[in-house]
Image (cartoon, rainbow, N blue to C red; front, side, top):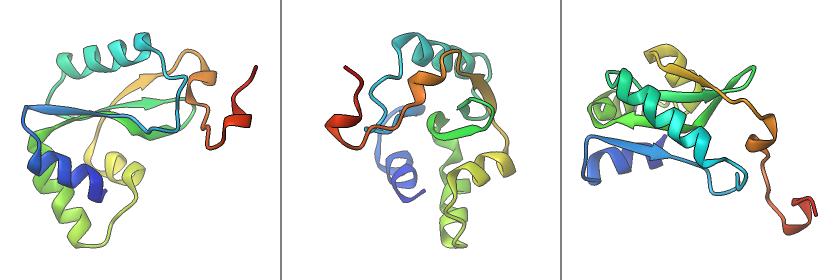
Length: 110
């Protein structure tokens, strides 16, 4: 939540795309769908889901910064819980493999 808060306050623009650096298989197609859904409803974040919320793959409008700051100040640091409490547009992933979390080179299939 702290990283999201910082970007929303310090970055320029109307919205930000967040994507974890340890998810190398997320496709351009999924990101395009995520951005497209956000553009259709820019009042709330668009967040990737796959049977459950994947909270760190999201497009977040800058006007959410006050909500994020309030949550951080109150110690509510679970990003997924925050989206569920505040509302979001769900973007279902079509290929579960795209959400593979890779922390070491040997975890990448040959």
